[in-house]
Each structure stands twice: as structure tokens, then as C-alpha cells.
Amino acid sequence: MQIPVVLLFLGLLTVPSSSQNSATEQNSATADGANTSEVEEEDPFYKSPVNKLAAAVSNFGYDLYRQQSSRTATANVLLSPFSLATALSGLSLGAGERTEDVISRALFYDLLNKAEVHNTYKDLLASVTGPEKSMKSASRIILEKRLRVKPGFHSQLEKSYKMRLRALSGNTQLDLQEINNWVRQQTKGRIMRFMKDMPTDVSILLAGAAYFK
Image (cartoon, rainbow, N blue to C red):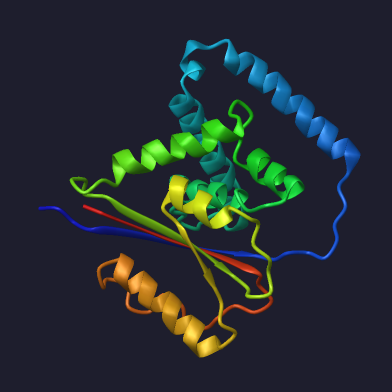
């Protein structure tokens, strides 16, 4: 007997008006990443972009799990690092240079260039979510309507990730209904009401759903 499994996530991002970085922290992180990259590049396993991406997503998942589990020692934590990393990688296509670099470092893409990241995701998503596969995965980027979209972002996102942008209308009830309807459709009706209220002071929503048997 096959039991359907549904995974959902919702990410909330804000776009700050200004920000500053510590040069010391950046240099330290760069140095650590460089040392790790040198060691991994010598391993034949890391010659394949797919293997590089798999290792990066695993590292991201472990790092995220440690952060989430440390909040409450007795909590049960269920993560889908591939879904989260996919959504963030898609978002990076429309990000500025600094934000794109932050996302890349958070996802441990030390050994991958931009083209490898997006092309590998394109191939992986096609292979694991094809018509004959039991897994269905979908993600959506929802933007506050005042945000300006980077030229070419729509087409690049659709081409590599099969994701579409959605702009909030500004009507809280309509936006909430649209998001819940999308989740219900993607989960084949198993999640009828994903969100009870729209979050406030949020510039970007990352919504994702994975359904498999």
C-alpha cells in the first residue's frame, strides 16, 4: 500500500533599505570556503556537477537542521532541503550581485558556477518530476507588487525551474485565497487551508509543495 506524503514550506523574506557587512567575517568565510573547496576538488566524486550539487544541498540541509533543532531540544524537525534549495536558487536568478552571493554561500555552492547550478537543477527537476514519476514538486515566488523585477527573470526562472512569479494584489483576502488555492491544487486537495492569515511586512514569499507516494 502506497501512502501519499505531502511536504510544504513557506519562506518569508524582507528587502532591507540598507545593510552593512563585516569585512572580517566575509574574509574568514571566504578563506574557510576556499580551503574546503580545494580539498573537495581533488576528490573525483566532485568532478560531476550533479554530485557537487548533491553535496551542497546536503550541507545546506545539515546546517539548517542544526539551526532549527537547536531552538528546541525536544522538537521534531522535518526538512526538505532539496525543495528549499531549489526555491532559493530560483530566487537568486532575480537577485542583485550581493544578495546572489549571500544565497550562494548559504547553499554551499563553493564548487559550482552559476551556469552549473541552474543547468543542473533543470536536469534534476526534469528527471525526478517527469510524467511517469510518482513525485510532483512545485514552487512559487510571490512578490510584493512594489518590487521591481530584474529583466529576464521571468523567462530564466521558467526555463530552469519551471517556476512562475506571482505579484501580490494588495488585497489581503484575495492574496490569501489565491495562495491557499494554489497549495490545495498542488497537494491534490490534501491541504485545504495552508495559511490562516497573510504575513505582514514581507517583501517576498517562497511557497513550495512536494507530493509523492
